[in-house]
Length: 159
Image (cartoon, rainbow, N blue to C red):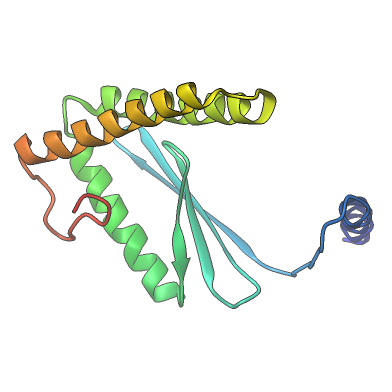
């Protein structure tokens, strides 16, 4: 444990030298694993400095879920999420869904590289924004024409 404290202090010093304000928090991290019909569904959560629980889904694709007031709320969200995945793995489109998610994550990483490494002309920024808007419109259109299959909770992002 002393080695970890020394290493954390070295990292903290380096970050301070870079101009950061660093607050070390002793916390417990919890790693949760499910396998649903061969599909790994995994989460990690920790208690933050405000005594709130920060939850992330890390498999089958990464997603920062949300911060919760208590463990009971967090467990209920995981329960709903697992029910949703148990439902979706029955779909004949599960592999396509997971592939699209991986492609979207890859696109976000490429966009970040583009933004951080290059000076992008305004015309290109607008073109990219329009393409993203088209994808968002297509998602809403698809929702309107698709059969709803999960009813335990309403979607939070498709209104």
